[in-house]
Length: 127
Image (cartoon, rainbow, N blue to C red; front, top):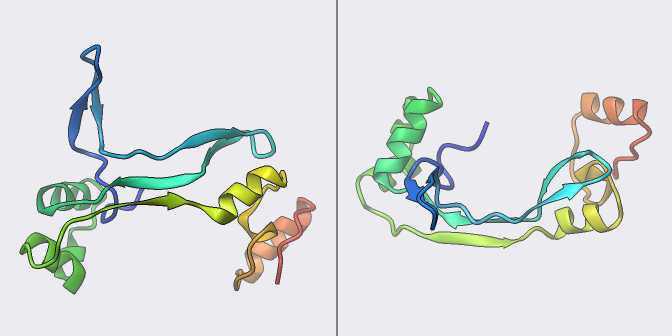
């Protein structure tokens, strides 16, 4: 599930040929031959505004988040809206080094169950 309180993925847009699309996201996705899935190299997009935040929280059944200070501040227009983005260094390394898991190129505290699952697949997570 996509985060409901980050990028705007519901705002309707139209392509040059008139096809209806949704979202104001500009992520760069490539094919990862190791995982055989799409691989997000960047996270870029227009962040949620009051309207898109409420709609996305409703669609994901998370309207209770509207009680949190950050979410209230967006809805009440108390903080500036933003555009964000950047190239994911670890994700880029993952692709270049042909790794299946972020933990193979980035050190953090991984749950024991994740480490066990990775071990079974001969994926060596950094500690």
